[in-house]
Length: 146
Image 1 (cartoon, rainbow, N blue to C red):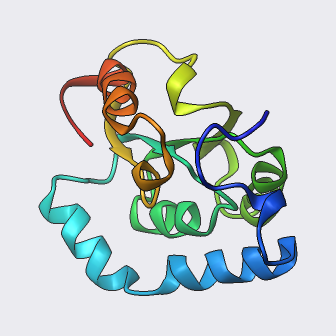
Image 2: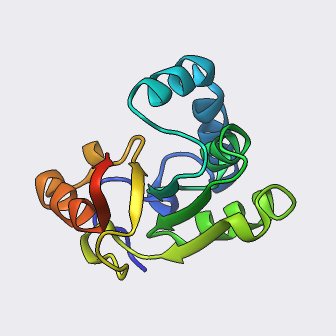
Image 3: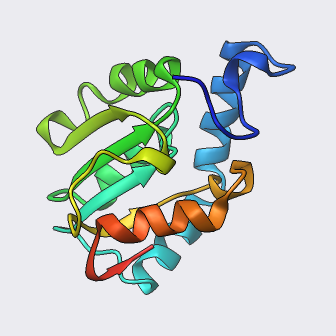
């Protein structure tokens, strides 16, 4: 599936491997503070979580560790990144993680399905961030958080 925004793994000035390493470092950077902020925003273990723009799964791994009984659905437009995530998380998530190749602009998910949507470093790459937020709002349960 072709990316619809400004981020394109395959047309970067970096190699795919270098970009994967950069994304790993980005996911680690400041995670402890970010985990506290997510908790303040209401993220709790046991919630159904959607991670949009999940990339290679580095942040997903941290979310799985933080939320040991939660189920996380990962959505990304890039098959290479989803394959990387699947390999990275094969021994970390088990049945608690699901991968979907797709765009935030065309989420094929049921309404009112998720308690929390995590979209780190996503909106700045989208041509229509407000439209994306509307799409996300549809899949959030009443009272859910983005």
